[in-house]
Length: 403
View (cartoon, rainbow, N blue to C red):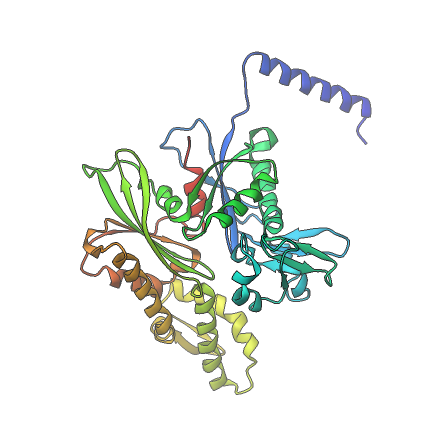
């Protein structure tokens, strides 16, 4: 065991060293923290506050899982404690009524605005005692009610633990840049801001998610002789699709959202369901008693393999090709295509005037999705941006905004 007196001496020496460094003007570097509080996953990214524009932000990996993606899930225990992220997901099947996810769908909304979403989830959604406030989630056999803001506080707090593990408590700035969907109204934006304020953070900028995605690729910076460019951000997340048209003034760096069009019932989860059905059909050729839930479990693996390869096999050699997947998902792909064109029609934009197309959201990795986007611009020649991880774009863009 370490001598307590020795520990005291070390602590005194460290304090003295800190005082000396402070006397000579040394300060620990502070960081800009960009946070994407997402529907399915949340991400934090950091960048030194004094860094040059050429310095890229870095995504923060979770201090336990080493993954940059933290599931936006919170599970509640009877003793009042909570677990967040992957640990909460692990409790989802056994304690569905006490495990809250997709809180972003409910934030800043009253009970009359969430009837569809509340019916689609296993937990209980109740009106606030004050009818003007956002809904609440009733957990632990109705002994506790929490708001979407409360859930957001838990998720962001988990992200900040990882930030502090990387830069230390002195380097972790109390100032953050946060993002919201374009379609969020003022109550939703205010509620999102409140998540951070309840943690003692100062929101220096609140930007819209497609703007952050464009900034992640530095599309706001001057390039060539063009004074402006038109950018389409195609964002296909786990549960929603948003297509936004941006106008970027490259001399000033300003970005304006000209239009946005979305499908709030179309996302990666819908493609998973289509693929699970296709897997089930294939596997029942081999085994008529193949359990359907096995196909649901297999869908994620098969989706990854079809992202990397033209085909894969299931259930003892049953072949599934990328083309079969595209055919099975044709209705979803058609809805995507229509959403893209609707977003451009809103501002009477011809695809040939689009200079850049940015892919955001994890589901945009799928080749069948990318091929559909390419087809929408087949007579144009934009630059398609897929270099960065689409799951991380929004947080990277937020951290890249330095006042």
